[in-house]
Image (tube, rainbow, N blue to C red; front, side):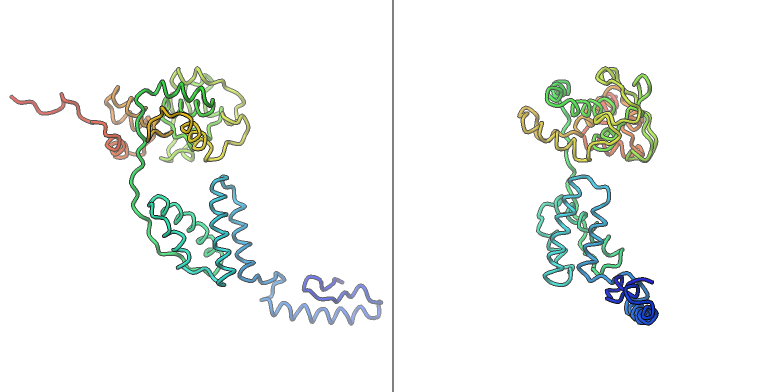
Length: 318
């Protein structure tokens, strides 16, 4: 026989003499039956609103998240919890107030997106909450200014941080995206002679498999190690998503010669301009950039203000 601890009952038939055990067990059975009736035939305790919120938020925060993303969601979840404890509910007015305090469109959209992640998780798991109806705002495109003297900038980066240097070199020389494609690179992605990189569709923005040539000046800086190890950590785990952003930010803070608007993506854009100027081929640029279509590449070039036509392409006067 079992005790009533599971249903918060003090009855424990096994603690009684044999002649009383059956009677106590019958009493406990009645208590168990009544408990199940009250709790929808479940031994699981029905959680109150606050307890349910904590369980659902903890399940979301226990997912594999980057350090920065975790801190952002954690901070927002604390605001929601305080409101829940104070008002007994999380209203759409309160949700909107968190987002609307941001005047900058980028900050507005970022906060809205992160907040929706939490609200959708709560809503989808049965928590009573109404979704915000705020729409995303149009953002100005971020200008990643091309670099005039990429060799000099790379030398500055090299003297500051080796990992950042390799990242910038691969961004420029192979036109890979730094925060995902490069950060997650393993030595096994390279050919034996390091002359090309194979990337599966699941790891690139276009969702298509890519084979990327590696220029000699990049290969000379690489020393192949364990097949399944990340090229920066030399373990099976990569750095978190914000790693290169933070290192680049620190580098810029001590490098006053780096122009305003120059970012990690500036190396990729500079490489794209170089390819187009040397080949004049939008098709080769598309392949090098890993764009899903020619239209994407054309839009990209216009954004960089690179002329697609030369003087000799223009009409002549007879």
